[in-house]
Image 1 (cartoon, rainbow over the protein chains, first blue to last red):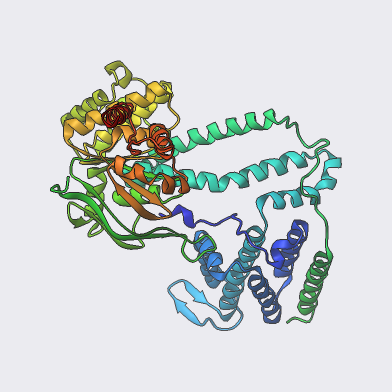
Image 2: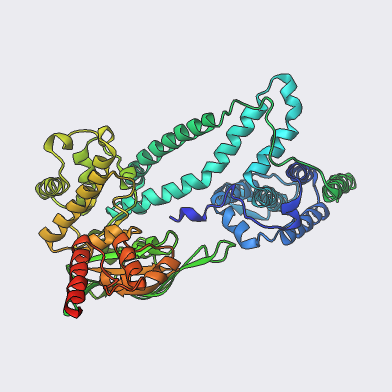
Length: 270
Length: 292
């Protein structure tokens, strides 16, 4: 088990055009892209979306390998979705394959391919967002976009702060887990072999210290925040102000155009 | 020391972290390292010099990117059983080991290692009590929860947890970090006791030259994934300027004598203890008298 390989929600520092975009732009683009993915019905629309995603990966300098590595945890879900779609999509013509109670129709194959593609593209596009945006900027962007909800009494700042703290501590906790695992392995702990019960028991020496250290960290962080007079979002100013630039406008227009184009393609049944 | 056989050694050991990502970097480059049977060895290096990476190779927690690690002359990665066996023979105490305690009682926590070795009840009991006595834990403390103990006591429980496996080589990464002077002395004393009682090889990792100078027979300096110097502390301290360039200080006494030498006094600048300093000063004075 190599915990260091988990890249979910981890930021890859860089200076590509995607890195430099305003986080709000990237959030909106991600939403637009996901909307377009769900509007897309035909091959042409998928090819278009795939091309856009490919271009985005190319300019991001993140590298296809890091993205594939991040995919590993979701493989099971993707495969399961594909299989379910393959078998459970009823078709009009004769089934292509008949096997015991299973029938596979041409429609099933299409549905499976499109569904798997849709999930993979959806994940890739959110990966691009978190790979190219530091967690702090991401939550700043979220807080700003959700600002109007404050008027309705939603604790937007508090939620954003909780989220940025959570994101900030993912790598720390992974590192900590790695360290405790190594320490227990040095005492002969075995995390990889045995049946399910044995594997679950093997986690006790890992989870107890991990929980204790998480609570300790939370406590220390709370004290440190209070020492710096943190008392919520009211009247807080920012070190980094968010500002839309020329590129942001261009990208947002591009995003809107993409959604419109995909919708139009759908209208013509492509 | 030369007549002794290397119990643990590396051949052209290299390790590269996160290869294929923007974070790729080589932590160790072609390192040839050896620890001899029964010696008290020190590894000294700056934070990020690669010393933690090196020690995690010595008991098979990290797999070399290239090169070999040999324990008693055999490659520790030759088979899975061999790697696992090495973990018991080469005990590794991590930095801040008290954060890995998890059991309900101190006794149970110390017995975790021996239990994993598959020993029988009586042998486990013997080892736990022996390890506890090495680190000065009382029987009453053995029945307590590890979380009721003080920081220094927890540290000693964690060290006992590794000692209980009775490893031939005991590696300790900064075992005294963050302890008060009394705690430091206790831990260093415990380690010395284990060293003497079992004729075990001790590898002490630290960045404190003072601590090293007092305890080890031989020093290995690690810098930027390589080993620039190794030898007895006195020889190492002759490279004062280079050591400082690596971000490592020399002991205060050595610094004083280097300065005296620069001022024209006829003294040996490699001294590092008060006793040696006294001798060096007396020698210098005797020479001066003889000359005059």
